[in-house]
Image (tube, rainbow, N blue to C red; front, side, top):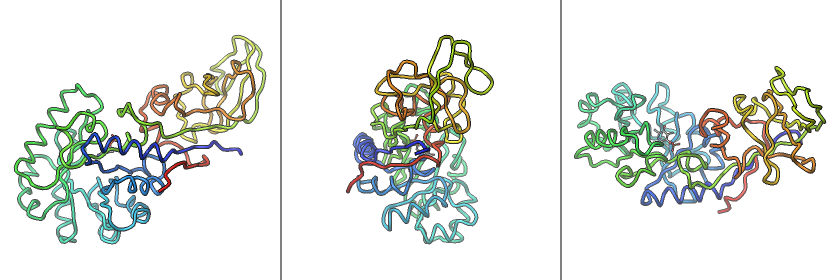
Length: 347
Ligand SMILES: *Cc1c(COP(=O)(O)O)cnc(C)c1O
């Protein structure tokens, strides 16, 4: 076996959804954009459906196709990008709910398919997606008369509980939705953890389902085992890898593993990330190559067949910190060359 093995624990995803759903008083949907954060929406979404999720969120309408096939008719599928030009047939055929972000999208939706369900996204300060207060004020009465399925906004700083932006956005959202009877939604994973005031009628957790921060109590979901291709003895003073950036200060054993930056192992993690065997850490030695890692296994008594890069010992967030990024990017970068093994998830 030349490729790494990525193990995805569907029971851990279920447990994380249950916990986040309970925190939100039974109001959680599930965000499965970007192929369920790289873990495979076709496998993950039906498991979340069985766990009780009845609303799913994707980034763009194109992501709704495989998802609708996996889920079958029934569960709601919301599209964050809203109603884009050319989406008409997908929205109708796949029964998608676009989250309208602007007056232009409202016009497109209402003129083409006034009878189809829609949601509305409001901008409460992030300045990324959604209607600004003035635009919303102008369209509000007409849109509310058409019974939106959901009126939503998104928090910019929810992963920092003490950030004053959270209260500012909560106030803005309350102000913009005063007197509105349609269901409301403000919280993703971070907002769910900020408390009940942020929950409204529907929460939209994503990263927490997949074991990532800011859901510190998450069950880890992914394990990544990388096969050892060969092992060599390296004398003190010899170098390892591109650019001669790493030199042995004593005689060491170097294992070469079959994965690299083409598999989503971000090059910036070199120097800080470690691989693990039986609870023992082994430092990366030298730069991450396209298809290979070199690892100092001098501290191990034996020569293992595989080493672990992701596990309970080193989660996606630990690896993200080593690479100067966030867990979301580690997850969504996980490459297509791995053998993917799903465990758990039995109905
Ligand atoms: C990605 C996203 C979510 C999910 O966010 P997490 O931080 O992964 O829980 C929710 N809502 C919107 C609008 C998003 O873009």
